[in-house]
Length: 297
Image 1 (cartoon, helix red, strand yellow):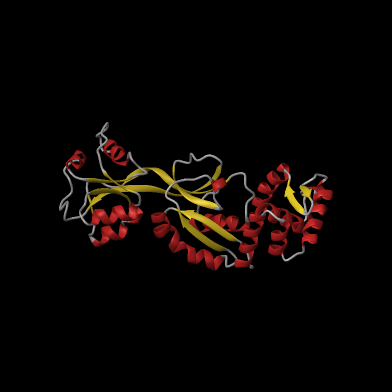
Image 2 (cartoon, helix red, strand yellow):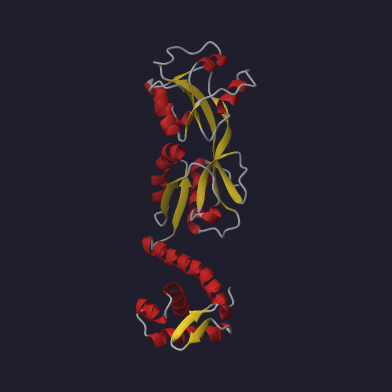
């Protein structure tokens, strides 16, 4: 519990914030639908409560002290958090919301087909999705959790492993009518690569007994665009197997050489390790563990 003597009243805090932002008691009174006398009274109440002078009074003019301006800058953040929490509550009065950052391709092919079942199991939770291509600092965002790809090396988060990944070298049949005779033959063909995975072709060649090679490749920021480029014959692509199963079955893509190769990373649900856990996140993580047979981290 926070010591109540350190918590100013909301009306007093709103009066102080409005005075700082608008520059005059008259403008603050108009915005808050109060009289100037009521604004002055709220400021006096806060000064008495905190035992600190907050306002410089020059006749009828009121101005904040330097310390009060610093206080308002911090208090404004708290007011914004409180406002956001109220909006969230109004948007979902039955329960909580889960703000989840997802990787576009993984979200479309793996997560999206599962969300309807989660919604049926937990109608009290509203899931809000937003795509991010790379890991980020939770302190700088409003996300409750995220799906990251990598090797479990992100600081300040807890993990739930969702899935390992296997990649397959593929091409359009128009570009490569038959599989290559050896892995090294890819060096004679145009290559496509995700810009966030610059060493994939090197690792693929090393897996097939051809180390110490780092071939150039055309870069893409998303698997979806790289897959379409491969389908249209632009080059060879290393694609996660779960993303191209339909393209392989339909013959839009064909294997280049060999079978699937274990990828360097895996997919994880991650969330801030030191932030109090919200009920919506606990429900989502527990549901994933039960339905997917995952082991809690």
